[in-house]
Amino acid sequence: MTDSPALVRPDRRAELAAGLARVRARIADACAATGRDRAEVTMIAVTKTYPAADVIALAGLGVTDVGENRDQEAAPKAAEVAAAGVAPRWHFVGRLQRNKVKSVLRYADTVQSVDSVRLASTLAAAAGGRDRPLEVLVQVSIDGDPSRGGAVPSSADPDVGLGPVTGAVAAAEGLRLAGLMAVAPLGWEPERAFARLATLAAAVRAEHPGATVLSAGMSGDLEAAIGHGATHVRVGSALLGMRPTLR
Image (tube, rainbow, N blue to C red):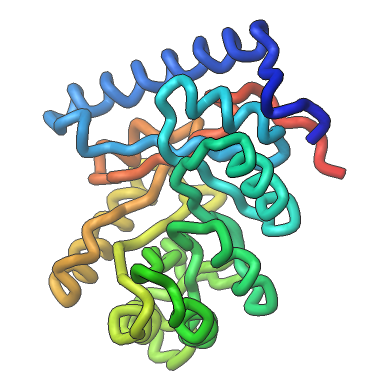
């Protein structure tokens, strides 16, 4: 992160404004196509590998929600953004190691990637001193393959089964079960993936009526996700451009 937060380049701000306009138009069109209220869908700007200056510029353009997936990058970035007097809502969207929980809780408003009872328990223990409950989304494995992360539907495993994980989050003091998050599996058509996710989300809401958030859809498939009830879409490259190479 070499750019100074106070010095957002005018050309970069223009690039971000253009990307934001395109993404907002796509979201509005997808909502119109499915008869949904545009206000029902929140865009999360996924800013991994991009500098704090971009977060600050996006906030100035009206973006309220920002996502990060690696604590080692997110923690200093969030501190830099806060030092500039900017306070977006931070979502941690990557796989979370339990030894990173305390660090993540210093800046994250929502953790979207809880996929085990053990992780839920670690979060609950660390979140006890917060002034409000930590918002939690349970990440679900749509295809039932836990290797890429996600609680497994219809599994009896007491640690990674979807039922045990949602139950553990809902029962934990200091946590609030807000809903589900998922990524379309490799090789699946988005429509098939998000239709399956919508069914799983309805089942979770039947047991936990407050779990109304559904975080699904990214730059390439946000329309399909919105069509199947996504309340949050996580957008990176369509908004910010092609990612810099990870070091």
